[in-house]
Amino acid sequence: MSVLVYINSNGEKIAKNAFEAVTYSKKIGDVTVVTNGKADDSMLAQLGKYGASKVLVDRSFEGIDEQQITRLVATAAENVGAETIVFSNDLIGKAVAPRLSVKLSAGLVAGATGVPQEDGTIPVNVFSGKAHGFVKVNTDKKIIALLPNSIQPEETGADAAVEEFNGNAGDSRVTVKETKLPEGDIPLPEAELVVSGGRGLKGPENWNLITDLATELGAATACSRPVADSDWRPHHEHVGQTGVAIRPNLYIAAGISGAIQHLAGVNGSKTIVVINTDDEAPFFKAADYGVVGDAFEVLPKLTEAVKKFKA
Ligand code: FAD
Image: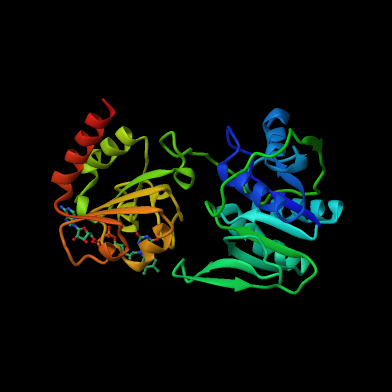
């Protein structure tokens, strides 16, 4: 079976969810990767270690214009005779996979968490992660958008062959006026450890409580939606149903109530620690460890404890 994977290679390195998508696809069939932009060949060749036999790169356009990427992937799918097309269910995947589904009349399975079963059904997360379902699409071509952090990237092979490719992506109707990279060394979607704050932190002037602990732990920082809406923190840190969905090994939430829309983005975390003054805060129901206490007292103590532990 021929499987085509789209990955975004516009960053300084290839993101973990790209390696996940390639590892996943290798479990289904023979993998070709398609991408766009200026990434150098040696960076792209690494995808071979995760199971790609070939990488097609269209260097005629950079960036993440959904319409150009849709045309690129459609051309590549025809070129390699792909029966299955895989995306990571990240911001680009969520925008491109449905467009491609219409363009190719191919059924789409969004939010996949595992490989197709013997009967062709694919496990998915539904209702914002509150339940698991199985979806089967009956079209000849299938599109799968894999939920980030559903599987571990596995190194199995050698470098892939990298080939220049003309994806007939066409012109972009989007004008990029400015590009702002997120602060911090650890991109939130890839972070294994996350320290997050909500309205209980009272204001942006107190955010050092969150960042101090995050720095000691080597964690990324996140926040609830009202915090980003109030401009206390940048929007790319907002996690939840309408923000970034994350699945870190550890999620520490301070001063966050645990509304269902927040939980939708974090309840895949392996271990959840909640710090809240209200012992009836809904977040405690989802927590593995709960501290009923004032974040202004608990966070500095936690930071000190981590410092001591590391010394
Ligand atoms: P609050 O609800 O105000 O809770 C603050 C918490 O801090 C309380 O539990 C309080 O007991 C505690 N607290 C107060 N002082 C302290 C202290 N000193 N120490 C410790 N704890 C303290 N929200 C998201 O986060 N992400 C989303 O993606 C999202 N999408 C949404 C989509 C829709 C369509 C809608 C309608 C809402 C969405 N929301 C989302 C908003 C969501 O419903 C909640 O309003 C929001 O998550 C609440 O944020 P919060 O917990 O920071 O604030």
